[in-house]
Image (spheres, rainbow, N blue to C red):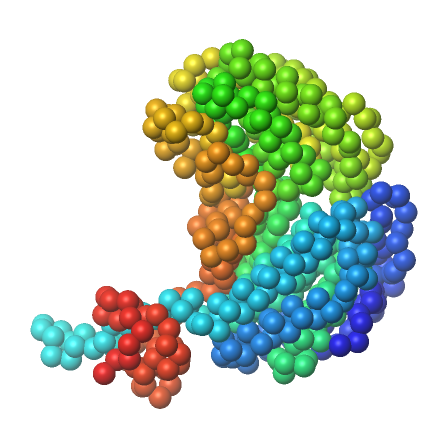
Length: 532
């Protein structure tokens, strides 16, 4: 494949377009200087063309086999890898993230694409179920009824600021939507327009060389509010996937529900990821736990959706010692460049606002003041009683910040847990016998999060079949679904029941012969055997 470079054009199916005179430019967050390249904003006409092409492509793409879609996904992965160092260099310039982090993220992106390729090629993900007819049943005959998951239609994907590759143009949302049989229209993130342009060109090329229908993928440039709202309101949009702030995600969700025909919006909107520090763990592993959480809070400059922003423990001398070790660690952390100017400003505003809340005490801060583009690591504390009085303390401070909540009793600890908002993750640090003693706390915490971890840190997400990256509102808009792992594909599929269909027109997965050799629920039993 010819090496892709940031072109500044909107990619619309197999074509490119740059009608608008209005252009956008990427900014280097470390230098606050513009990066070479002008990116044309998508016009209303270009939006319509992209959506119309995607809708037409759906008529063909929805009927492609898993093997065909797998070939497409693997070609995307190969193309992204072939972009080499120029892609990493552009992403570094636009995000301020280090080379090693972005190389790892590229690997995750490629891995996700190949994982979904394997999933759809095998085919059991469609959850085929068959109940054969019983014509002589009394008092009424039983019809032949079969069911499988089918794609939903055009999916609009909003790319994330904190993962310019893995949650972006070819990230998990795009990979899972394409795998399910849906065309995708990407809204490029303003912070990494060049990175998006290069990856989008790689996807476009993959679609063309694997003979996908024109319109199966498009990528549009524009501001979040203007372009984003237009895409959500567009009558041809069937589903939306978003990763970002609560404010933006909730706005898209509300817009989608105000349409004449509402559509699902799967918004992952962040979390403060509470960590419960049981007494014996703090007593026995005081300094080690503190060091562990210094690293977890500050990983990626605190710009992961799973960084622990809340540490909850029983007030005693061991918790005091833990806080001292935590402060010592935070003081030594060198502030690093944040993703963009807005993220940095929002971090400072959120940090300042929380520190001004009644009862909050500044415990420690990095000894290095940094500059206007860096986030200064900070740790604070508050009593449980003050925490419970103020819901503002549960707002995410997106960056290297954590708040320690001091509980006077087990009853107060339970009350804090009961009053937590929905979270992506929750973590319990304890000794073996404490997981039995505090079972009620654990049981309630399970109701608050999509992933509960024992004696670990929440930061980071393993991309695998068993991962669930989602949680009760406001962490996400629908806690039943994940945005990471193979389960993510179910966001972009719906069940369809086939009653009394002639065998010749049944989908391959529902034919008696089971030529695909997938797992099916036949008359209540899981089997790969054909129906005879």
